[in-house]
Length: 368
Image 1: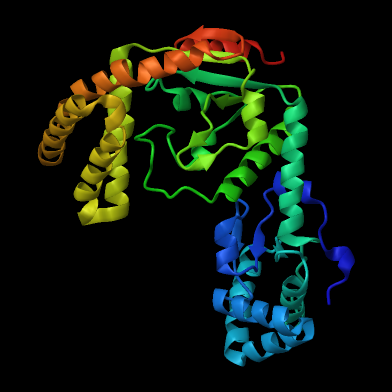
Image 2 (image 1 turned 45 degrees about the vertical axis):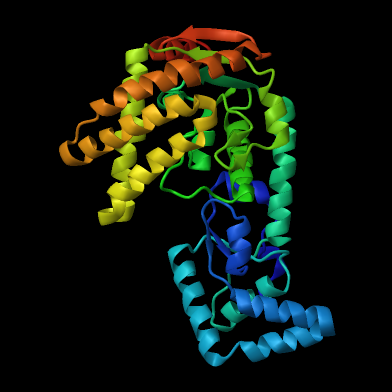
């Protein structure tokens, strides 16, 4: 077995330096929560994990280990070693972990050592890494200044956010644009994975720029189906605001660009020949989701307009059929909702204006 001194307990180092991680937990565990950059190369598949777990509960650890050895046929062992070798050759400076840094990690490490490969494991495994990130976020939220970039739908908050020196893109981490029509073709991560990425973002910012405010987009509790950590929600309530403004025409054009043109391109990339039908379903289904707030008559009108607009868009590439409905949604649905929410904000408005005004103001606050 590799000397325990070679194993890793400096969790901050792993995350600050994006150290590649080989996650040897079962796929079902990985899907429930993982770390950015971690790759699942499991010791046990889901069925093997279930069988060994049952054996452990019924007959104890020795019986579970014995069953694991029986399940590790020469063919399976060869498959695992090939996958691990490929990972190690690609990421020679990486680490491996299981759930608690126990039997699975040590078994993986020993099999590798038998093949002449020494590779460090993470002391405490996934559980210790996760605990570190939970505690780290709580600590940083106590001291880290935060500003919120706010603005009505379509003002281009994400565009501006990504041009600022210090920011964390919550919607990017959530794979969601933060509105009824914000679902993307990229599936949202697991809740735990989302929380891990937020904590790592705060960790990196605090390590590099501890005195500088971190700019977040002003979000509600939910981004799609993902929930912001409660402590972050509390931190955001009194946070100072940067209010981005844009003309209605600019907002219409941006919504068409982001939610129609670019979204349709994403659907083409993922779904190919099925893209047109799936995109139409996406648009009309999301309109249906807000039918109660729109009212029956207004919903039916918009549904007909956009059904016709989708036909014209697919046949001629024309987006103008969406414009009237988008304007109505902005003015009659999204703007009143945003204005009400802004009126309830506790934070001071530090700056209000267009994109150039916001970016210039932020840069003026930087150390000289």
